[in-house]
Each structure stands twice: as structure tokens, then as C-alpha cells.
Image 1 (tube, helix red, strand yellow):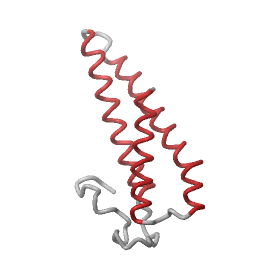
Image 2: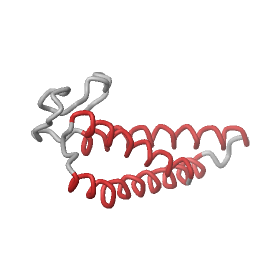
Image 3: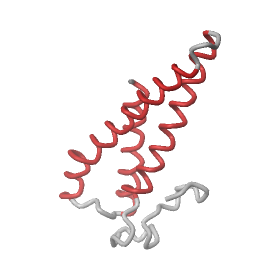
Image 4: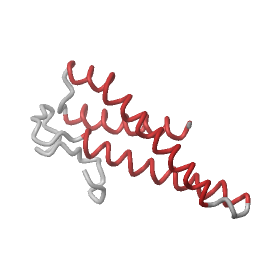
Length: 120
């Protein structure tokens, strides 16, 4: 559960960092919506993903040695949380077509610090 909550916080941090850097959808009303709707939604999504992947991986590794029963589920949970965080960033962190006021980002609102090999 702690990994899921930490993953949700990381996803929310990425989204908030991108929006504030580009100043896109970061006005007070958007920050309110982010704080009370989108952030809890990301936390819940990451928590559910972590628990579901952990339970499925534990079931699949039931016949393996005790070391593999801990390593494989943890690795799969981390991978799932990375995918969910990148998805949240791509869907919520880069509001395409929203006019950003900072002048630091192109029109697609993807900050320059975001790796080009990851989807946004």
C-alpha cells in the first residue's frame, strides 16, 4: 500500500511540476480542481494498481522460492506504478491546446525537462 501511495504522490508531483512550469491550467480554479479531484484520483488509481498487481503477482509466484515471491511482485508493482505515473503525466500534466503563459514550453505544453523518449 505504501508503494501505491508513494506512486500516486509521484504522479501528482509530475503533473503539478509540468503545469506550473508551463503555466498551463495552473490558475487558482485549476489548482483547486487539481488538489481536490485529480490528485486524490491519481492516488486512488496508483493504490488500486499496486494492490491488484501485487495480488496477481503473488498468486503467480506461489510455487517459487521465498526470495522470488518477494522480488517479482515488488518489481512488477514498481513497473506498473511507473506506467501509471507516465500515463497520468501524459493525460493530465500536459493539457494540449491550453495556452501556457510562461513562454518556457511549446504549444503542446510538454516541458523541456521531460525525456523525449517517454510519451507525453
